Image (cartoon, rainbow, N blue to C red; front, side, top):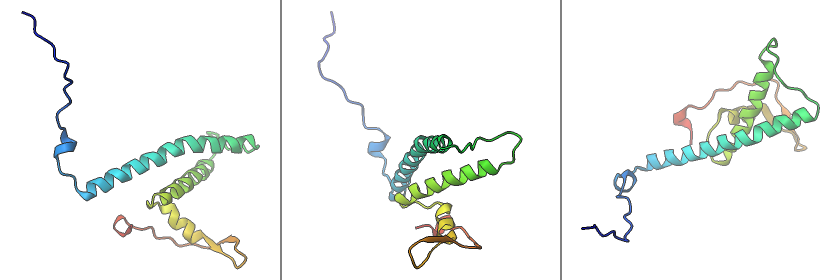
Length: 129
């Protein structure tokens, strides 16, 4: 005797996400993780375009193996500055935000200047809003 097949589709049973209680901290952490993933994916798209445009404008920033690390550090500074502004968009802390606050000042005519000296102490995780 053949077994009759049903036309009813069985849905998966409730998984961990449906039964386990989730704390506000876990939700906030998951949201921040999604924000950081978005920031990193944006950087992977934007940064190569930025450096490519700089190179097309005639500035060869490629790193020679015999050179010191100054070009790498300068490039990293640019990447982290972009990361910091994207983090600020999501109200996430990045140390470059402190650097920008300390390095630049606004003159009376609205133009930003650069200070002569800085002394920066970065926020600790427990001080971050």
